[in-house]
Length: 405
Image 1 (cartoon, rainbow, N blue to C red):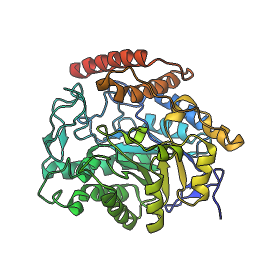
Image 2 (image 1 turned 90 degrees about the horizontal axis):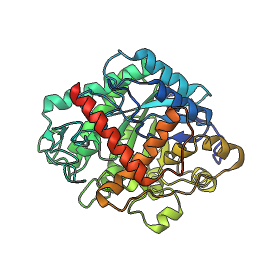
Image 3 (image 1 turned 90 degrees about the vertical axis):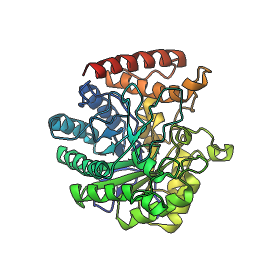
Image 4 (image 1 turned 180 degrees about the horizontal axis):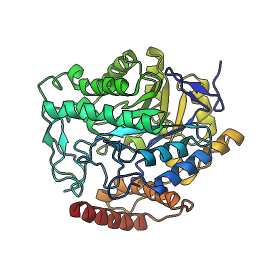
């Protein structure tokens, strides 16, 4: 049968997603200064639930208070915020959709104003902007094993709070992705040195997480098709990882690509022919579908209902992932399902300063999330310069509060 956007999807764990439109993770940065969930975060997910999503995936929730990707990430390492987490889950499920928590560790991808010495597989700094990221310290094996346990513990708390499952973030240059890449993992022990050893961290996290949440909750992985860097995590290595993930019987694989150093996930460096097909990683998804049978979600580039329907009808993917469009059009899923509506054309937000332009796009969309969290509508006409100045101010205030404890 040819799948449609309106069709439900039952995952291997038994959870039924009511339609084929999913919100991919975007880092909301809407915790309080103790990294706890807030009413603003709950209001944002209620807005998205009202918009008709089948599945919501939260922005990256960190598994360790000592390791943040941004100052206002939610952190879950114990049950101190269980009630608020439950409110968050209920908001995402309020219109019949499902919600899973993306869990993450930033590794070396923690800005200097957040961490003066982050940890990573190897002491290789992020090559983006002068002074933006500190040189990381290589993890000890004891620390690696502790982080693996943390993923499982956070996942268990998420499911206890009412989330339908979790997604392990192994893309976009975060810690699990760092272990996979030969550019960032120079280890010669049991955690690096060969492709098989480099993927061990992710597979151990998957096992720890499944043990923690059981077989009836969603276990998803977000994986790079490639890092789009010479000598980095390649498509061939990614396919080998998918093979192992299928053996582990994960419930959903989300395909993406790129890192902070090569931001393919927002369209940078993509060929014109790829952009015309809309889905940036569609060719990779086609290869995965030919060899493997696990459910696939594809994120990055979708803007028209026709392209979304085509990807489903061709049997390439099972879920359509939307991220940036939902930052400006939270009701887009309902309009797509009702009338084949299209998203607004993608616009680039730039000030012409190279060291800032790569981040303005991310900050611009994050600020739209903050508007919705405050009960306002998105502002599609917000200027890039205002975005930059307010973003620097927000980060400065956040850094000050972090340093004061």
